[in-house]
Length: 232
Image (tube, rainbow, N blue to C red; front, side, top):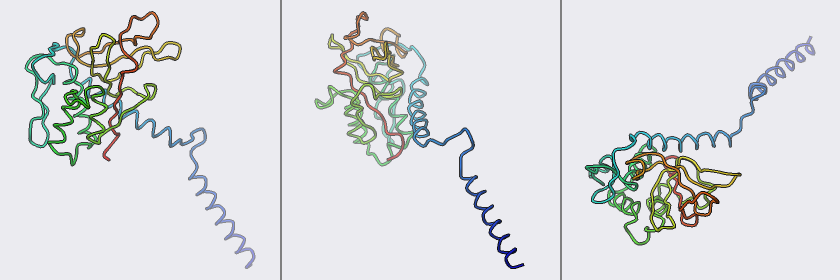
């Protein structure tokens, strides 16, 4: 009788162990991939930047001189960082507005001083000498809310990009996607404010070294900035 009881106990324990092991395993045909989950989460964060960018209506006019370029006033810490431009917008004002809202939604601006955010705005616009070339890429790192993505192939939709052209003009944009041909990046689809879209809108430009495209974007002077994915 004792042996039978011990055998029954062992069988029960074994059965419980098997149930626990089975419940710990993912369902058949579905393997949990933590890296894939992380990629999905990061993709959602960058998609959120594009959603902010698209929350501003297309058009509205493009006026580059004599204002902030911002579609709406930007407040921080009870003070106005930039006023809403009375008429139209331009690139830096648009992308700065997108960056500030996206950063605020992620909690990245918590603990930042008004003085630091004012400096961030000036760097984003390329006012200080040390930020004139890379602009957004310098600004996010100085404020500690993002990083400079140094390889173009590592950039993703929702990143911010400062481009320069071979005719010496520049543009601040939100990356919608790269234009690829034969697996190579030959152009950039972006959202910003420019004359060709009469203000805010999507546009495609090609790199100067893309064959047969007559592009003017200087690949060597294209700088990418990415906001951190959450509060750090």
